[in-house]
Length: 207
Length: 97
Image (cartoon, rainbow over all chains, first blue to last red; front, side):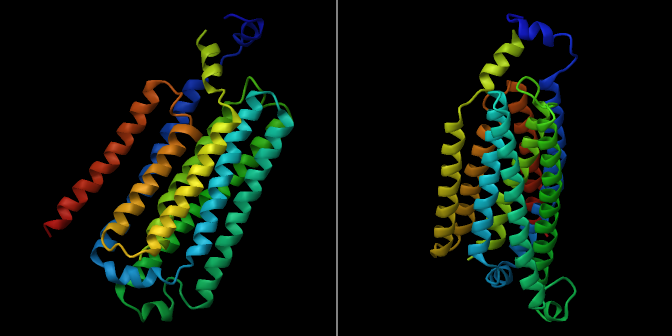
């Protein structure tokens, strides 16, 4: 304990490393959740390679790529908000967290338009249009809706969690020497980003 | 002392995150471009390799794995290893059906 700052801190029972370790353990369960779906996807893609190829042509690559960029940017603003709080730049950290939420919302709005366009064309699980197609195409769109849908749920949850962090930052609960909560929500947010990094080429870039 | 070191290790500048972000965007552009070209059966492999590089960058820089203690890296390695093992087992089983 070299500085007075840390002497004061030593009275507080806190273990940031263990806290982050706990978050990582939770992320591993998320890995299993999505990992199982990626397993399912890989077998069906192997079995129905040509039909997956035909079905994937209907997805909008530009919209998918744009959404990838939006999510990658939100990951960066999240990481930067932690640097800002470490440097005691509270307002900057808060602004960066709010930008992250706005980008997440932007991602969801794009997703909404993408899904409604598909549904408008009669492509949704159990629709007559879809059921008249080959089984590979039915499986592709089934997986598409379930996997991007579950990912979307994670984005919504992430938005709420970051909003709580922003509130805590504003109230001075998250400070430059106590920001492990923000770090943990950041870890979750980056995992959501990583999942999308794999979903994007597997659904949009089958050529 | 440990706590002191921890704060020091974690204090990356803003620059590295912006650099990694640019790299991630560039890799996205590359993977979209490659998908547009017709390279047949290498398409999936290339897309997955690029996605893995992107995930590696996010894990090491954005998620601070590079500056965490070794235990974290071992944990993540083991978790990923088991995921890969389940893929290998599944496809071994599948190919004998």
